[in-house]
Image (tube, rainbow, N blue to C red; front, side):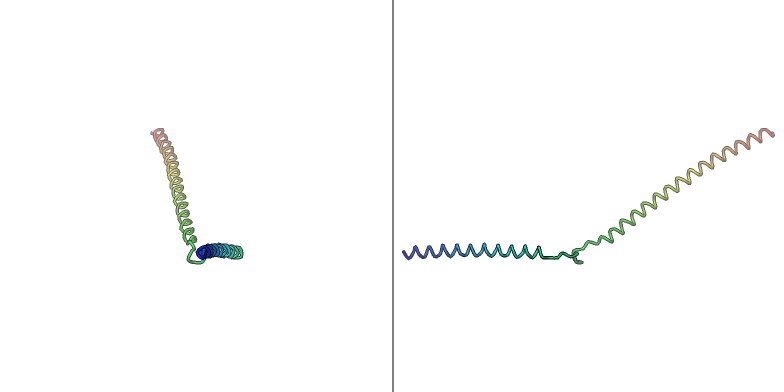
Amino acid sequence: RVDQLKYDIQHLQTALRNFQHRRYIREQQERQREELLARTFTTNDSDTTIPIDETLQFNESLQNAHRGMDDLIGSGTNILQGLRDQRMTLKGTHKKILDVANMLG
């Protein structure tokens, strides 16, 4: 009979400890949930920030350089087209001068 009572006491103590542990865990979860709901979020501090400004400036500089190269290539193309037009004009003038020289003898 004493052994049975000891066993029952151990069993009840284990059940009580399990119940207390589950209650503690539930209270801790509720407390954490309330803390999260009541928390006001702010911007990141300097330890977790990403230097995005420098990256944006670098990207903008690259885009400006790319745009500048496109403008340079466009100017070069316009210059070459102008030289071709001048060549055609000079050829036409040269031909007319030769025609005039041939007519004059």
